[in-house]
Image (cartoon, rainbow over all chains, first blue to last red; front, side, top):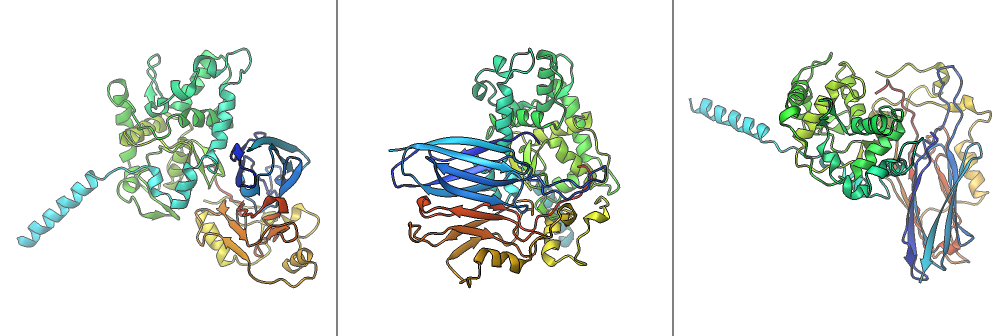
Amino acid sequence: MSTFNARITMPAEAKAGEIIEIRVLVRHPMDRGGQVDAEGRIVPRKILNRLTVTYAGEPVFRFDMHTGISANPFVSFTTRAVETGDLLFEWREDGGVVFTRTARLVVT
Amino acid sequence: MTTRAALFIGLSLAATMVSAQEIKPGSAFLSPEMLRQQSDEARNPGFLWVEQGGELFSRRSGGAPACIACHAGPERSLKGAATRYPQVDAASGKLLNLEGRIEQCRTQRQNEPAFGYESPELLGLTAYVASFSRGLPMAVATEGAAKPYLEAGKAFYERRQGQLNLSCRQCHDGLVGEKLRGDTISHGIGTGYPAYRLEWNGVGSLHRRLRACSLGVRATQFDYGAPDYLALELYLAARAKGLPLESPGLRR
Amino acid sequence: MSSPISSACARPEARPSRREVMAAGAAGFALAISPAAAYAAAPPTLAELIGRITEGAVPARGGIVFDIPQLVENGNSVDVAIQVESPMTESDHVRWIHVIAEKNPYPDMAASISVLAAAGPTSAPPCVSPPRKRSWRSPR
């Protein structure tokens, strides 16, 4: 499936020092491979194997995914609001394709 | 005599209970956890399809204007639209569901090739349009031109089918709340569709769900968009009249 | 109703465990497969995997709240919440959370989650599915 979309849910602004929750839902079949296709070939694994999140340039969260992660995976985590900046979300798919999204957090 | 009278009263009471049985929405049969996830737009994966539909809605394809060129401000202009489907198309006299109407728009007004039933694009657009009616009461027309279709749908619902020789009604009226293969039998009104089913790992149409039921009783599986399923869809929507539309629902 | 499976998909174990049977029941008629043939290297054993993570240290129990439903709606997707007691300061914080399922063909099934001191007190509930099953079914 070529359709990749991501829903990132987090507050647009927060007070300095506040703990915010970030919820990430992405569309991906997370195909663990191994099935035999109609031609008798073995389907290779194709999953999102890593999500990294940086906040104002600093890495804050990394999620290494293996074959046990469900299709259309959801993950939620918290982080501390320190300064106004972009959160950069980067997913790495088997085969090297990278998907990115950004979300801005305004700290008051 | 007394026993017979008591028995008779008991039986007639049971009969009234069945006929006066209140039709419940699909969400009434979900676990609290899934119900919470269904209403949470950040967690319900169906909204990924809604989002895809939103992108398609405002994107031009080929030389044709985008959907949004006619349906500006869809959150207002299409509010409640999905609650009125399936409906009879005035020009052709045919029964169309929401998928059918979107395909008609695409082929006749945008002059673009049809997406095809159950394609990710059509599912996305259908879920997107339906999402503007989330929580609104189902309000299909059942009189006039719709009446023969409704009758056909009702007949389908009540007809025993397949190797198991079961009608829809036997389970979805007679055994509601009982367990079947790890799931709870609902009234089968389909107001959550297109829905995200865990079993599918994705969003699917009501007709995909109906095909699964047909397979379950080992009856003929009709094609997507087949007249039989369309008529049934109308009957189900009529049964659901007044209940809230839940698409994109979350189902097991 | 289940479709025939190629012998290449057969699981090495002779009998499914109770857990697999339960998962199969929930998913209709899911069957487990081992995609070992797809990969050159065999998956690490549980002991190897834990050894790699702990690097010889002796694990201590406690400090973790692991929230997973006892009975799942469908094995395709199960929400799991993990909470670790930690002050999350520069000098004392959680570096990694690993989720391992020993009955899975690939025990390092789920996730390794790295959180940084900057993150503050953290809970990370990833949506993971325990022993992932692939369902083989007729077109529905």
